[in-house]
Image (cartoon, rainbow, N blue to C red; front, side, top):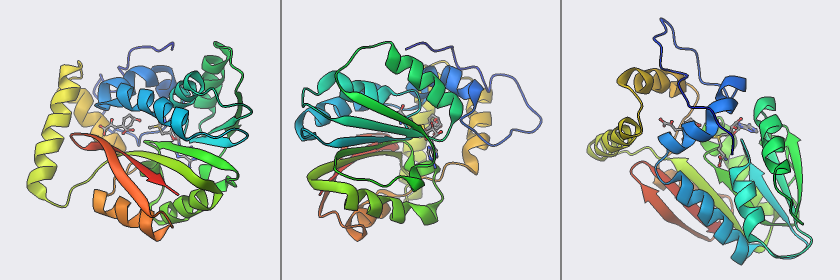
Length: 243
Ligand SMILES: C[S@@+](CC[C@H](N)C(=O)[O-])C[C@H]1O[C@@H](n2cnc3c(N)ncnc32)[C@H](O)[C@@H]1O
Ligand SMILES: O=C(O)C(=O)C[C@]1(C(=O)O)C=C[C@@H](O)C=C1
């Protein structure tokens, strides 16, 4: 996947603007997310593995907040089930444009419908798999239950939701410990203290992580009777919920 090096926060700004998924971010996003989220590559590959075992023929797969299409590409690489459609949605025009280019670079029998729109407006139907890979944390907290409920209702029996998120911890000692190790991961990937602190300010009002307890409670409240974390590295986790 084509990506420039992320140096968006490398020069000092007197006022750091709120983080947006604009053209500049879309251009460096592959590099940004790999250097910022521990385990991202493994999560993307495993989403493809889950698709292989959970997707059923003649069903829909939703990739919500698809960005450059990494999860969609992983799913498309892995599934052999016939007559499936992937519906990939993002409300950033720049992401959708680049995603379209990335998808066009590979041939596949699985149709992908790319939608530039809000994931809160999607009517889910006939779904065997839904992916929310680091997207729910950007929705207003008040809108999260309605989205997960609507996903649950659109899933077929036995269908799977994969939800990856940055986590927040009630226990301040654990919060600080995992946060420190996440920042060390960013440093080891070449981000400077300035880049780390400016990005942190940019994300402050935009990304609101929930605790694991909150995610688990939400799954139950929205109808899911089976859910678990399948991956965690520091303060980043990926969960599965099965209908
Ligand atoms: C961290 S990125 C997701 C990464 C991507 N899923 C992946 O695996 O590479 C979050 C994405 O969600 C999109 N997004 C945020 N809120 C959205 C909304 N309400 N509707 C649609 N897309 C949204 C952003 O534009 C951004 O591309
Ligand atoms: O928490 C951070 O420091 C991050 O950079 C995380 C995160 C994410 O989880 O989506 C935030 C914004 C970018 O999309 C890439 C990574």
